[in-house]
Length: 79
Image (cartoon, rainbow, N blue to C red):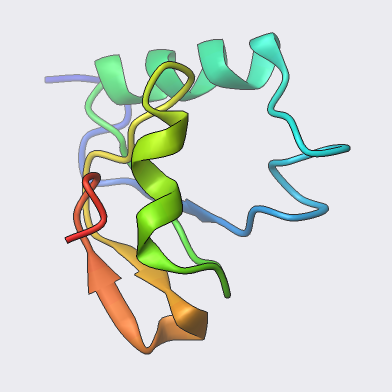
């Protein structure tokens, strides 16, 4: 049992998680820590689903993400 079991954290990207087109090292570490303690991390964005795998080196959502402003729910592979 982790300290974040049952907690879902969902974030927007542009201007929220992304700053000047990048995600800080500190935010990536915080996401991985949150997930290691049982938290579910996801994103909600107007972007297309195919952008998700591009960030695999930095962060990986571990539950469904909302893309195209909620029109499509997809996994971490954008499928």
